[in-house]
Image (cartoon, rainbow, N blue to C red; front, side, top):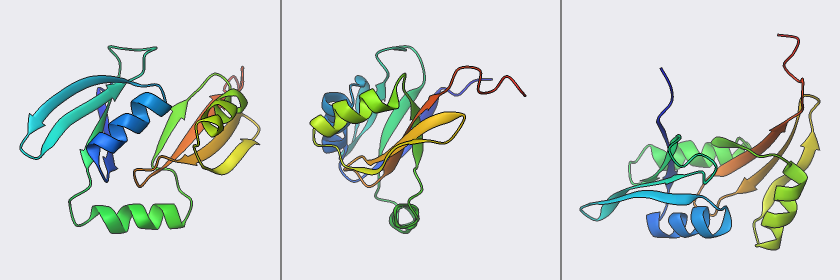
Length: 135
């Protein structure tokens, strides 16, 4: 068994697509019209046939209180692995991305958290080599 698709609720699919592709660097994978919305996914250019991220409309009434509570508590909704958090922090702040937590060494990894402009906090993580050798 493997994870094939996961989703993030977004306020506006087209704005989210622009942010995830033009700013973060993902690649649009699927864009299937479904009435007013789309089945809209992006993938990592490093894994074009890997896990898809569905940019799902946030219209369900349960979404807003759920996301608002997570943001208020500073809890990221998703985590993206990167090679170097400091490099990504520099690249993304240069593109206007707002970080709620700068790069922070937590021992086994370095993390940072940013606002995706679509209603979510996203955590970046770079695990340190040999961080899980003791398991």
